[in-house]
Amino acid sequence: MTGAPAPSGSHPDQHVPVTPAWTCDSCGEEWPCPTKRNRLLSEYQLDRASLSVYLGSCLAAASADLRAAPMASLQDRFIGWVPRGPLAT
Image 1 (cartoon, rainbow, N blue to C red):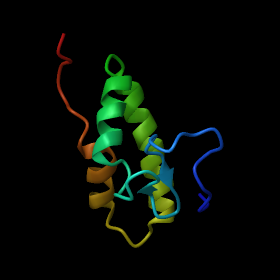
Image 2 (cartoon, helix red, strand yellow):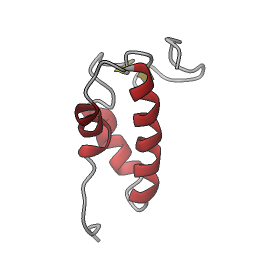
Image 3 (cartoon, rainbow, N blue to C red):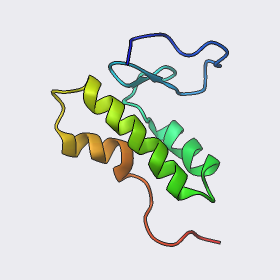
Image 4 (tube, one colour):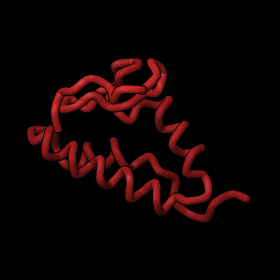
């Protein structure tokens, strides 16, 4: 991944990742930041499998960019926060 700015057409409060550091373009925290996590949970509310696939692809890209980071910490950061178990109805 490159250190390109947020994608064109993105809004300042979208909380998209800035690579290769994988920080949030809006708040500067590690991506996915708490705001983005909440938004992703809401967006993928009924399709947690797709959320896991999306975050897994982000994890793969981030692991290439953040080679010095321990894989366990990257896994926690990218997919460890996703709730497990049955969806609440």
